[in-house]
Amino acid sequence: MTINELRKMMPWIEDYFSAFAIDPAQFGSRKLEELGSILGEDYFIEMGSSSLAFTDGFFLFIEQARALQQGSGSTVESLTVLPGRNKNGENEAFSVNLKKGEVTAIVGPTGSGKSRLLADIESLAQEDTPTGRKILVNGRAPGDEERFSTEGRFIAQLSQNMNFVMDLSVEEFLTMHAESRMVDEVSRIVQKIYDTANILAGEPFSRETPVTELSGGQSRALMIADTALLSPASVVLIDEIENAGVDKVRSLKLLVSNNKIVLISTHDPLLALSADQRLVIQNGGISKLIKTTLNEKKYLKSLEKIDRKLTLLRNQLRMGKEIDFSDFLV
Ligand SMILES: Nc1ncnc2c1ncn2[C@@H]1O[C@H](COP(=O)(O)OP(=O)(O)OP(=O)(O)O)[C@@H](O)[C@H]1O
Image (cartoon, rainbow, N blue to C red):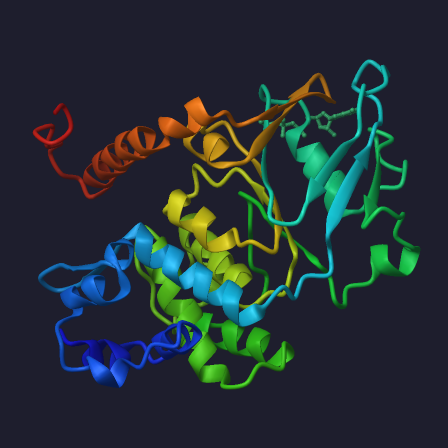
């Protein structure tokens, strides 16, 4: 496949060329594989026999380009979680200040209160939830209008149990959302989100699929792509991405950009160590804030390799194949 053929297949790719001031006409007839040498190794795109395989570098490319296009855009510079009480009614020891561009993992045993913390932030709690926490935006308490308005919400939440209640196809849903955001070129952004969601989802789906018929993983992938590419949210809350049948590492890269505050509740070491820091929740209260160490970061690449192998194995299992351990054990 040539670069021009890719441009025809995915017209939205032009956005990224223009964000990087690259004129694709200069190398349009060259093979896709050569894109790596043009953009730099990190952006290399592999070609399978019948399908495209995108590297993580490509996703980073997309993400960086998007951040460039959107500029700093975000209005939320910081979120502060003022101390509340744990399940025993004891005061939390310290407040937590989350800044733009930071990714924070929330870790802790099952039932410890990770989702509760996300819910406090989502509802911009003002000492009116079971924890008694208070959330400040840019250093001040939001007014009721800000808290309860559905317009211009700057917080997006992705959770494990996402159900669509509308009777719309994927295409209708995305079109409606894009139109409500008053974007230019609705059909182009719709295709971009659809293509990205299909890359993230374990099993592909068509534009005509009713959203109510999407599997858990597929609807998750659709909402991740939608949030990353269309929602103007400057705070993204993610509740356990790991079991959703989506490519979690790529999803995180897509959602995280320099101008967002991202919180992710997780039991997954790969996701937790991808974050800048982690909040430890015990018995309903925030008990520690640990910065990810350089040593931990050093092992991320190896963890990613192990995780890819496990994903392959999981896919073989899902497809009803006999497991091939030849690559796994080296
Ligand atoms: N500080 C608190 N005070 C009172 N109740 C709390 C507090 N923190 C959490 N809870 C309650 O404890 C229950 C379990 O919390 P939550 O669902 O947030 O746990 P979790 O860590 O997300 O668990 P899992 O890992 O299983 O998803 C919820 O009903 C929640 O409202």
